[in-house]
Length: 149
Image (cartoon, rainbow, N blue to C red):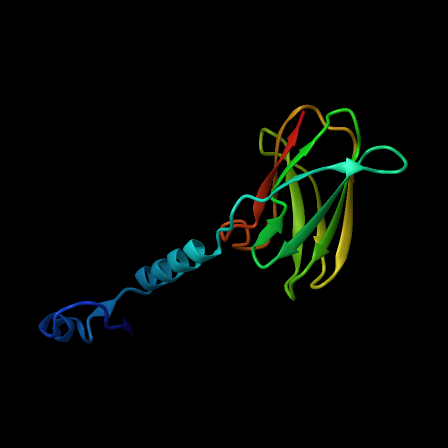
């Protein structure tokens, strides 16, 4: 059984009434996860794919603790795209690309503090999802969009 007490702006009698009040482990876990999600969601960081010398577009992406930078990318529909991913954290991540219907098109794992490359052919116009599909990473804010025009 998990027991907790709450200390905020309650009157002393209210605090005494809560001491030793049993809480379900599920409720405690939900409160902790909500606090983590609220603190981890990052702002939208925009970027554009730049040209590659041999043709196509390159996107330099930084994966860090539960976020991608940039996390909103625009690219042309008529050129291949190469994602160059730098993992700036001590945790393994991946880049998973989903088509507009949500199906996985491709993914690449990125070792802790490592680098990886994901090469894609020219994509049809649409909004594609980017995420790290390791447990809880997307939930904690490690996702983004690729807008192909």
